Length: 633
Image (cartoon, helix red, strand yellow):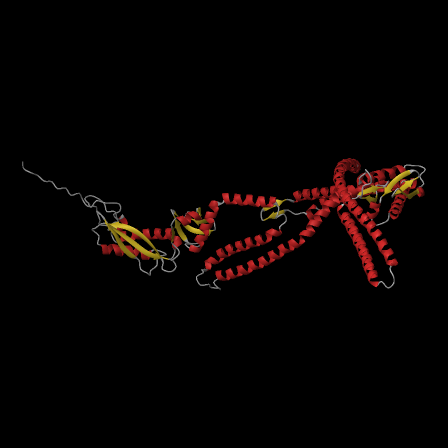
């Protein structure tokens, strides 16, 4: 109950404040109207001066033509019936006068019609603030707006006369004018210019204005009668009672809906989650729903308030202007919005058509490139792995072309603000994306150079790993230690890249390692001892056969390089580990010492480097040889 009382109090406060705002708005509007009236009066004065001068010229010419016409008619009567030649000349002159008269009338009407379109009329207001008629011309020292104000004031003063007899209002000619009078009070004077403005005689226009004033006064009397007052008072009470009832209905509905939602929370509301993550719980959803319900309730209160106030104001005549102003405040923005939307519909249709056409064009282009990627469609000189990167470029260009086509149809695209923001964003993008653009260009170049593909084992600079991802900006590698390394494409393009996998499936990748053996071991034995562990190792191909190269003859040993083929470029660590362990086993089995690092070729008293389990049971380290030379002094 307290909410309803507070809302009614709020309604009254808003009504009072809106009235105050409307009054202040009316005061400002009156000031502005007076300023504009001065401008309009100046314009009207200029137009009416020109019109009066033109009218005087026409009237002067009409008098001259009338005199000339009378002379010609007298001459025509004086001619003999047989004088046909002079008679024909006089008739032609009379016809010319009639044509000139008709042309003057047409010019006068055209001038008046032009003035109707450009001149500003000022309304004469009745007691109920209704517009009775408009005044366009000045009279004497009074301009059009002053005449309209004076007539409106006289009508209001006349209505305040308790002994007013409306039928006593009449009109009568007076010194070239027609006056609308009540007893000895002149309500309004009508000039010939006023009559010409409405294309009527002065008496017709005076009669029309007098009847209009009479009807306005009778209507005002009827509106301000005691019966109408009590009827309006009852209607106001009915409006307030209806308002209270609707507020009560809305409040009851709100609390009923709130209890219903809370009681059925588990039925209507569920946790909004994805897998193990919950975005919004049911309790949070309940709070949001109750908040929206409360906002909807206050929206209904506000909407009904805005409807109730104009209805109340429209009941009484003196507040009907406020009702119109309140309706205008909300109707004009909505009308402007809907008008703008309606006017924008053709442009929106163009945008939708362009988008749909471009969408299907892009889908067709994607289908072509997907066929190229799957190698169903083969283009000479165009590799299958170029298909999707090329499609990405073509798609970007098509979208850019679509945006260029749509841009003129966007709302506000021709405004200076829109253009300024576009230029500002373009400058920021240009200044902040120089390195990004360099990487993008490098990414495009790398794509069409085809130095590697996803899954290849490559080496970029000092980094070796498998290619996980290659984009327009970066290339990502995964090392044998499961490290993810991101390398900018500009660094990839400027450096050297070693690809271990590109030819491994065809000719095989050659893995190689070097051992150093002393000169005392025959090289043929070393070659055999190196090829055998290669054949024992996993992932080493039997064909082509491994081979050995002697890469150096140093001071203490010979460098032998073992070369073997493999197709497992991504498992080089395991291959080298297996190969090295097998080399040690075979060399130990064959009794060949790997003299790396350097060993001196001296065995006196030193154990061999071959492990003991590879030696015979009778093996013993050599003894020291000592040679003593005795000299006789």
